[in-house]
Image (tube, rainbow, N blue to C red; front, side, top):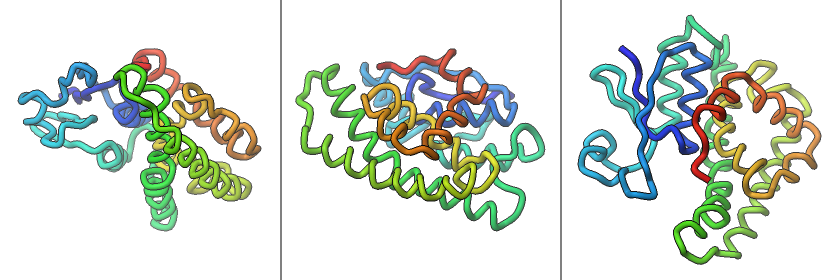
Length: 215
């Protein structure tokens, strides 16, 4: 049965889409318009009671939270497509470590930038200049740590592409291309090379081509 992915236009569902493509898993998408509040409608809340994206349906199995979903498919289809979890328990530990780093250190300040720079004007609410400045400072510090790490390894978990890198694509795209902060990546030699590598993978190019960001 084909996997259904809800909300393909938005960033976090794109994390799922690129994983499915890397793992050669067939899927179809179901549009959900956040600006119209479709994620708060009763039918959607039956699938995702917190009313956020993404959520997937795989036959009778429903799962939400993008990083849980990509871990699930990387494990379920471990014998096909790109190996995204590492080949040893030590590599797996590093993959998991950097997925957590992305979740708690990389995405949150970029999300704040997206809220204030891209979504606030659409929603007609004022931008929080202090939040923008604090986010810029946080991202710079995070990327300094990434620069040190990537001076030693090609990818975050080692010399192999994994979920650790893949998980950065959706919000990294916002940082580099849509918030005017590309310099934060380009000023760091190893981070810049890493970003060019992962963002030019055919899987990510396919996602960007077929599922446009809303802004």
